[in-house]
Image (cartoon, rainbow over all chains, first blue to last red; front, side, top):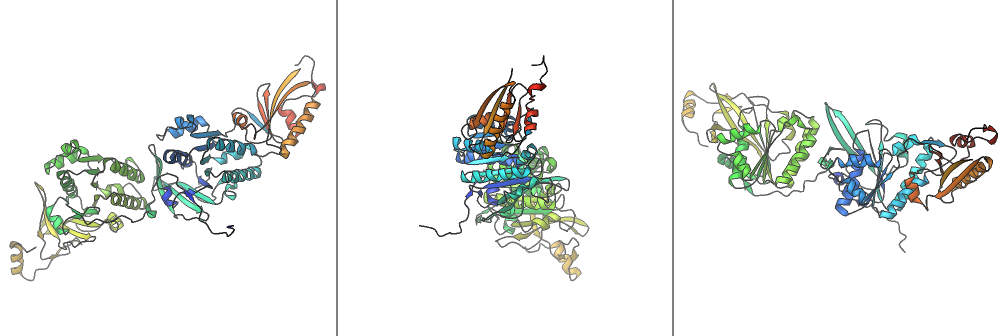
Length: 508
Length: 99
């Protein structure tokens, strides 16, 4: 009846792997095979095993793992390192392992023509016996050295791929490649599984390992292009950060919250928005950490939770300083309104920091977070991964509808801008600058709201002092220009007005 | 008389399988000094056995006895290789005193 051929978009199967489904726009092509190619140690096997485990965890879909390289016991052992109870899964028969590794200590002689029909027969048998929906075929490159006729192996693998398609299972096939660029896979494998190809890379950039995944092609169906960073950790296995594929779908809130400094709230037109990101930028000693402390304090006083990620100061230092500014961090932590996490920027890669921060946020569920400082993290990364980190954390914070305060240390004491600023200023909603101002041979401090998305804000540069009770914002600097540039120029017309302005309280 | 225990895996009625079967039968006829015990299995009917024996290619001939075991893949058309792999010796080659 319906002989009319329509162009039908291939259905996708959600993999259940964080981030993969976003960059694949829904998942892997359902009922098809997807080739995952990468150099040794790029995470292919973990991804393949995770595909099966997530299918089982989320949808109760059974899986079959065909291993050409690792023996089932080694496979179970290695995969269990990721916190998955793989042994139990295998024992229960939810995931079956087909051992296609060469028999140890046995000589194989070739005498005449043959094919790999037995391999397909075994896979088919296990799939039909268990009703598996997902198949992972790991390290098919290991099959080639076992047989002298590579053309035959390629043909037979093509037969396996076709057979799996008829069985309506979604398959991941991993394959080793020799270099990060060039030929997709060894032994000309790309000739037969050409429809869907994912590339995993593990490059050394500026002395840092950077893992990325790229959807090279998905025949007949949409996907995001380019490389996306990912991490492998012992809790979740592979986590992909779909940064540029993220959609700006967060609704923005009209609710304002206090920054903790009353005058600053006024300068911002009534406080910061509940789901916005504020960047505090200033030279060392200008009071960035103090602003963070005020921000945390304000939440604690309202009995809201806040989470502080500190990358510059130790826990002890933070607690001591906070106490001198009128907040007992330890007590707040005991009451459960605050959590302080101190770590060295160098302790892990930026991608891992991001995953860690996201997990801690989801665990603690704060209404505010602060990162002190972003520039400390910038030190240990490449520009590209730093930018991705900032985009990642910003959109995550917004999705959770939290307020975020990030600090940034500028290199120059007076004026100037840092690399961090220029790279993340477009991403944050508000920027507050703290600057040293030299006036008549004295050091003063100036604060200004440079940008406040979606709101009126004060345009003056105001003086502030770091007093006993924290930050105190005073009036605007009058009669001086060029503060932000770092070389103030006095603009008094005559001595009389200079004297007048020096002693009179100017109107704000 | 020396006993050789063999297991041959085939896939259905495939040409390679039929070929292997007839080649093996000819071999058994030729080497009359041995007592061959042959078991023929179809991977489509006995996949469980193929799993246990970790068979990937068909035809596969496994020499189970005497040890060490060995496996030969292919339609057994390369007779010289099969003979060597199974360590078979023609009747006139067998020296008195050896088993």
